[in-house]
Image (cartoon, rainbow, N blue to C red; front, side, top):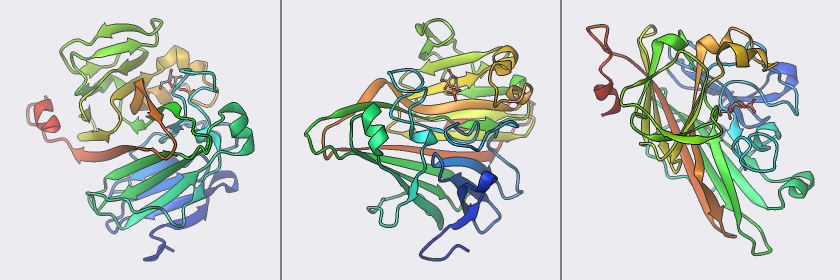
Length: 312
Ligand code: TA6
């Protein structure tokens, strides 16, 4: 049961893995597995799930959980020599009993602090000492905030460099009916075309086939409009210049063993990330990357959503 001192509940999840449950007074909730410090659920006041968890998700280390919000650190995708998306998402994290204070502009009574430090084995593949603190908070308006603080604790004076992403799987009614606002006219690297650089067209992004693009130097606010659900996801990000948009569509989905063949119709990944300009920290330095997700009712009259209102 959550208390003043522990504004969260500890419970057993799938396969007995430890998970944290955050509850907000008006029925909203979020769940985070210590395995990967992985948010697997975020529900609104009607108990509706806002994140997509694969129908074939595996909850068994070392396989990362497919869906929710995997953390990509210290490497995004194959931008380096480590396993895809790094190792933070398939390590067991700890509850951080004494986190340094975290000034926050959103009030929340439901939050948890988690911490990851490298194991001896991690140091063999990535020879750097670090402390990765993650605060997950459920705000009084139902917003979900993830604040990462990564500190270089090397004692050998060595800096380290990393790339990062919150690999969020948003639950959508029908992928061919949603649109993304805020990435128009931006440059992007197309992962389906050898990461060649292109410039996005001027209109909202819609989906009719596989997409895997890294948008560069995006605005801090991006919106996913799902008019069938009359819902808009508003993504606010700080310290994360880029945004990845991914949907494997039908063919690629069949090659992903822990993803159901039809799942692609009901999720879209929009990932706040730091990729194009990797983050370098000297010993003692700390980086902060903040993601705030809100799900707001989309108000529209003419069947045409007014994107400008959303991004103001
Ligand atoms: O973020 C997009 C991406 O890098 C895609 O290229 C695709 O590989 C996806 O992530 C899933 O990666 P995963 O390692 O979780 O299978």
